[in-house]
Image (cartoon, rainbow, N blue to C red; front, side, top):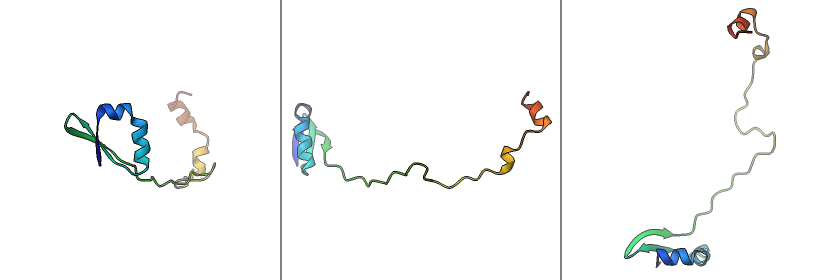
Length: 80
């Protein structure tokens, strides 16, 4: 593992990222103190995207009573 300074990391970030993609790992140091590691990321598993209109969760059933007209008393409560 190679140690680089913060200045080197800022100046040559693209070069270091290319090396990281090949598997190289770097320690980034401020002065003589190591503060971070630049390492390759593990591949993230890709979940397939749902198709348009495809259900991705439980199906919600709406009862017919939800569409029933409001009673006169309920209309009064709503100020209608």
